[in-house]
Length: 370
Length: 91
Image: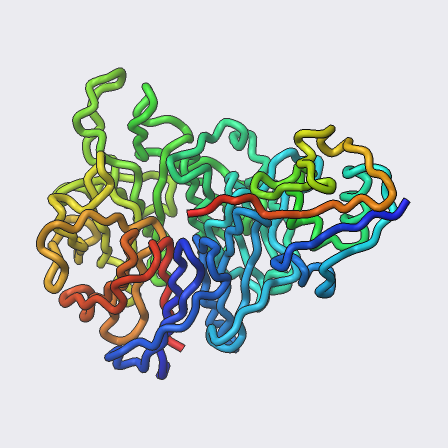
């Protein structure tokens, strides 16, 4: 049984690591690592000796990847970060996603402008994945408000799901060699065609290891009132697929807003899914009263979870990678805010405590029991 | 012709801790090409993969910003000092 819980908290001013016993009574905080530099992606690789990775988005000197082999007590830069071939013409602007691969040292990395890279040596060298990065659609993808980012990499055996804002969902069935746009049922609010082949502003995709065909998506919602070409697009923001992402259907009914960024699945129950609804216009908590919403029937119905959270005057945003859930028997949910608060919801989000209330603005939160 | 490169503290780890590098180059572009060959990590911190100087990095020849001279084609004379400086920016 794991003895400790490790949190990686990527912020505007560097990476923080918090550690607690698996009782999760109190967390010790260390950092920032890569001080002063924004961290948008982190990974806790629990295969073998745990390794922690974080992107370091240095506005001055370019992208770095930090790696720790001592549970975040120290970090060193890997020998290189992803970079485009010189003749490509694109330049790396940010690193948005880090994910483990098949082999022990295999890593995948999603970047801005939306492209995919792969490492076979734990992040010391990287190779661009042409099947996605040079996809025939790639030069037609458009940046969302956060940039043109490849933010989701989900692996399921030889299948791979990629989420791009704004590009949509792409599916590979050959281990990440070739990719196909797979957005049937995924709406777009900012184009005359409400259901284009690609170009949707997907915010996050989540899956479950025991239900590989099942996927959940937080898409860019908030288009119920649209009265322009193509008409209103209600409930396009929260979606589910039961066929490996080939088709999607809305599960947004019952939520106060279909706009949000993160989406998280319970580690022991593929029917239990969490979202953090925001108002479409302000991209903050509806009515200034934050709440996580949980469905225990795969999106058929939703319950508001807010015990312990502020009841009013809280207008923060929870970004796409700033919510995660641990894998203990009674898992705790965690989210970080753009106002620098790190919240933990015990018993699957039933009871919330603020672990840290004055961190820099939080971009990402990753948790693992080790 | 010998010129001096002044390396800011944040980038000295890319060149074995050196605060200054002595190179022989006739232009800023040739200087960066030499840095790319000899100190690739330092070059990656100054230029992106297209070869453009990063947006928040400034290069000076003596006291002149290269944008006020001939950019990367600014000619260098013996004894010139090329200073790499992060821009005053942030938040």
